[in-house]
Length: 518
Image 1: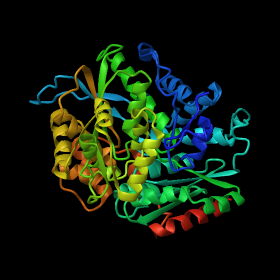
Image 2 (image 1 turned 45 degrees about the vertical axis):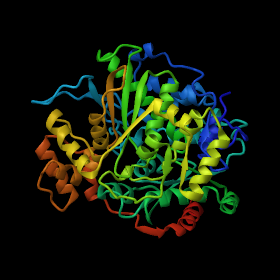
Image 3 (image 1 turned 90 degrees about the horizontal axis):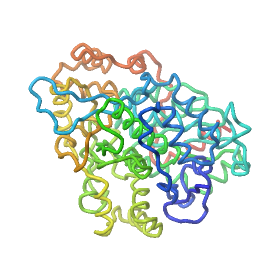
Image 4 (image 1 turned 135 degrees about the vertical axis):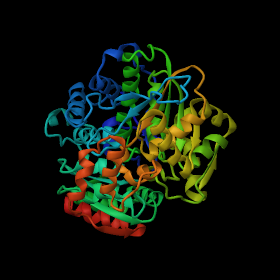
């Protein structure tokens, strides 16, 4: 069986169900499998497969102790009737408009925002609750199949604890609200998410949900969540109530695996459109802060997807750019609050998984690097490891003015409207020449522009009203686009969650929320 273990130790191997249920390894590392890449997906067969079929194939390969019926049920529940596009994640070509200079390699946008919260996190967070339910035996259907010796000692309830830089929070809330056997607590950095993002969380209904602002930035909140997971005394108190903690961030392998699917789905659509043929290499440009979205592309490459290069696009918090350029990861730097808040991150958790895989599974090295990061806020990899990393990943970053200019340029040259995060990727992709051998380029679009109407409207030079929802109307009228209904209707929803705590108060908040769940 394909077993999982910590990035920091090969001890205490567990099944994928156990890894999904726990979320994070006991030593603070992230779950990885040394079997990754042993099996390959036949890309020549992708063109005839729809999203659900591709998802069943990828998930079965990466989560092998889930039965075929369990995987099929999870895919059906996650993607049937929940996404506004029949493709789930459609690929849209960037055609030149007016006097725009044609690209030497055809470029497309992979739209990841057609789910219930208008962000790419929906793709994984519509799936994770289904995987979690079958890992704990609480699924409304298929529970008999979910029970096994692996989960026989599973706790009665799971409390999901997640820090969000903007989009994960709402997507997780939407996925786990009123899910059987689960509760969810979401922390977001107070004043550092967009107004629409905050309303998406503060208006969330559900008897099992808790939402709280944190006085600090995302890194403060994420680091505190990791400390909460490592708090053995808290774990013992919760266990007495029949509650265990788990995560919905991309540190959870159950969050990461579903993201691998849309890389294969994009390739399938490009083949059906005649843009590429089976075996042609494709370059992907990925706006990212926590490194999860682009790591999913690396997993796809290991599973056989012909990837020419993975471009890591950052905003002004460009710690990933510096690391991929110099081999030095240093979070000791100013933190910037930008118009791309979901990328305002200085501690990129999923980089740990990449370091494990590209170091040849050197868990001692990874543990040492993570210890250095915790103690000193920095670490440096060897030139040999950096070369292996650079063979896979390219990088770039965008200043605030460049992000705004990219929004305007994409609209001017292609008639295509993008949000600030996607604009970081657009800017970087325009600055870099296509990778050698790439027959197509794909920009991952992570969110609807209507989640950030003020930043987008200002970039287009529109008169921006004070109210975000009036701003949506101005943007819609000027561009002929339509805001997603689930965003427009937020203006009429009451805010249900008003809590704000200091970082030191997060553990107490979680324990209180878990008490209500128990």
